Image: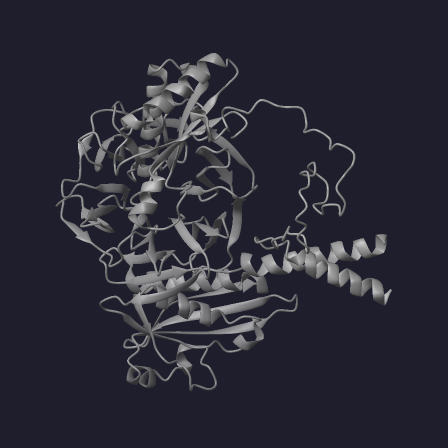
Amino acid sequence: MKRILQLVAAGWMLACIATHAGVARAQLTIEITGGGGSQIPIAVLQMAGESRLPQSITEIVEADLNRSGRFRTLYAGGVNPAPTEPAQVNFAEWRNRSADAMLIGSVQPLPDGRFEVRFRLLDVPKQTQLGGFAYTLNASQIRVTAHRIADFIYEKLTGERGVFSTKVAYVVKQDGRFELRVADADGQGAQVALASREPIISPAWAPDGTRIAYVSFEAKKPVVYVHSLTTSRRQPVANFKGSNSAPAWSPDGKQLAVVLSREGGSQIFLMNADGSNTRRITQSTAVDTEPSFSPDGQSLYFTSDRGGSPQIYRMPSSGGEPTRITFNGSYNVSPRPSPDGKTLAYVAREGGRFQVTVMDLASKQTQVVTDTQRDESPSFAPNGRLILYATELGGRGVLAAVSADGRVKQRLTIQAADVREPAWGPYLAQ
Amino acid sequence: MKKQITLAMALSVALLFGCSSDPIAEDGKPAVEDRTPQPVPPPGTQGTPPAQPRVVPPPGPSRGVPLDPLKDPSNVLSKRSIFYEYDSDVIKEEYRPMLQAHAKYLSANRTARMLIQGNTDERGSREYNLALGQRRAEAARRMLVLLGAPEDRIEAVSLGEEKPRASGSSEADYAQNRRSDLLYGGEF
């Protein structure tokens, strides 16, 4: 009898694991739904010897470049053997294919089981080499290397820093459970930072990318935690009487702005990143919430209904008189300044639609940049080029990304789940 | 051994249904209907009534326990929710008798503590809705204190739009979710 029970227990556990493992691995898929204005035509050739790698590196490079909306990748096949040096390239052929640039390279296996990958980026019209690198890597580093190559190409050809090596955090709701996940910017390799039966909202990356602050409802009320991605340990930093929410990191990573109701209402407080030295910096009887530091750390943007309707204000981050920023419409919330401090992304309600809007802070000109209608939580990529946000499509929560000028559009979805609360991570030290 | 594995697999498959969220419903009806009046069997026994009328008088019910006023449906204290208009934290007059009863209960029971959870419908920013829910919870708390409840034993928090009671997007669903809930210690 005991043997039967043991077998039953084992069978049941295996079945449960099998049922849930597939679900946990359901990943973020990204599709481009709108292209940018002028795209750079580039041919990414398969590298000589690339088939020796367990995974294609140039496929990942091509996917990265396509996803940015700044490139049009051309058909790069029909060339045998693959050129590894500029001297071997038939530039006329690639001019005919309308390429402005091309990537060539080689892969050599090393005696210790690792690989050496060399690549060169070429200017096709000028028939010159723009740059090249060699990497030594093992099979588990293929994705990271591909993203670095894509970053190099992006920066060389657009003059902007690439974000292919960054991470994104987001919350998945499925079967009544919630998970805070961290994935590569292309949606691959998602890790679960927190799994809970209660909601998780407002993830916020520390500027050094090693910690994430978030709000969890596991205590049946909102509490702010700081979670270390390197140790997987976390600490409640705001767990006062009443509600604790809306964490925002100062650019030097030393302080957090939070919203507390411990003195009544919802007001903005500053604290050290470990939760000590809490002090109040807004003084109103209204709702003051959604603090967001300017990139120079000198100002805080926030949402307040002190004027009768929720609008965006800016105040000195040490406290002081706020200045109103938004004046159109009766509902402007969720302010996020761009990494260069010149633009503000936020959500405006107009005619029942909630849409991500950008404002040029110098001219105060505004532009709605999405064609979705239930937008929330805008988050800038660290190069300021793309805005990641949450919205609703087909009755479920999805993420979307749009370029700051509204032209490039992407949709990020997970099968059979709601995705929400995205936060784009910072550049990571290499 | 083979029989054991087959039995084990059969049991595993049966238990596998325990992995999913819907348990298999049990039908408690007896196969044959017996029309002879029978005493209600005490809780915990099988439901099958005996074929003959009993000659021994049936045992009496368990010792009476007073109904918990907080959970008794005929007691106003079991009413725990206040509903609101869109974008409003105004508590309508109809809730006054209920709040009066709760204030009285909290004053009379020195160990009783309350958590008020404010909620909103799903439209708009999550953090702004968290703050609106907080406003609703605090308005309820203020009224309870005005009606005599002790301030230090009531905590007001917000769940914003995160724990809706109604999951749809109709106006009726939204109205269900614009709500403050009053919870007593042991319920949270």
